[in-house]
Image 1 (tube, one colour):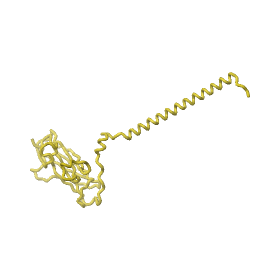
Image 2 (cartoon, helix red, strand yellow):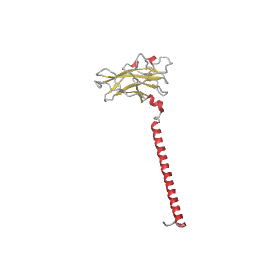
Image 3 (cartoon, one colour):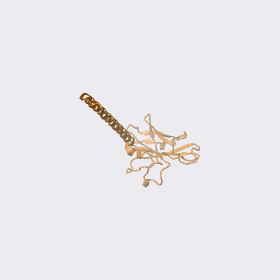
Image 4 (spheres, rainbow, N blue to C red):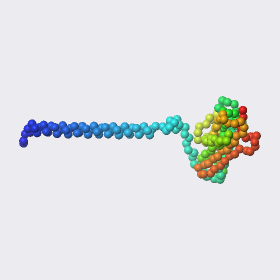
Amino acid sequence: MRSLNSGDKSASIAGKTERTVQIIKASFAVCAFASLVAVAVTAAIAAQNQPARGGAAAQEQAPPPPAPQPKHPSGTLVIWGDVVNFNPPTTPNQCNPQSRFKRGERIGFRMTAIDGGTGETENTAILTAHITYAGKTVDVPMRWRGNVPYPKDQYLRAPNEMWTGGWVVPDDAPIGTISYTVTATDRFGRKATYRPFAAIPSQLAIVN
């Protein structure tokens, strides 16, 4: 076997050193890539676990969707209701029927929606009150109370048949009669409109 001279030894050592450096560089590249992947995966998981806008409390407050009802739809969609005092519970006449309100007071619209064929509550109905005053109309969305908690000390039973919506009388509301209607539509495309009785003395009005 031929012995290596000093030149051959130097070349061999230089080659080995270069290969070692290349291996170290490749290892660093692999480690860096793995770290980036780990960071990306962690960020994705964190994003998935983040609550929607409004926080976890908002998600917990979202009511469940209504369950399908046998034999619905049947007949027409029927709605009716009344107007009550929706001021805070500690104030007089809270939740009592009322048609006269002052500026700053809260008007409460209570409605029910019925499947005309079965006579049962149509829990897929979406109701909106429309209040007209001073030449403009304000839409007040109403909420079905059948799938949310309720104060049991204030109800004889679960208000499964009730929709409610509230509107605070603004400072620019003129003194006098104001008009309102309530419209509804359900998942089956049925529509209905409620108008209060036409007797003038019982119309909704703003007073001093």
